[in-house]
Length: 69
Image (spheres, helix red, strand yellow):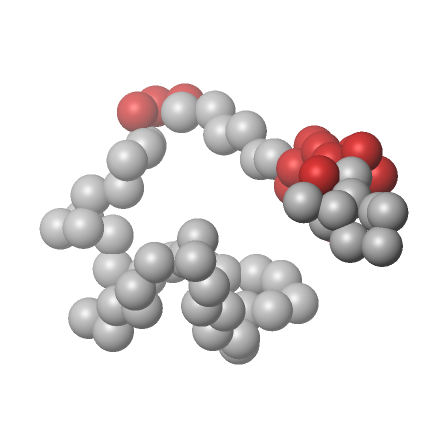
């Protein structure tokens, strides 16, 4: 569907390029040295969360439900 001769944002090559760049720059690969992953809930008592948004709850279509247990 075109609007005023322009493609909608989700069909534009510039939007795809930006999404690809964001994806490429946000991928984190983890080494599973020593078989640490997946974490065992019965053994892990605390987890450090470090970063700018650690005190924010971001809920969207990708995050799933918020668990408070």
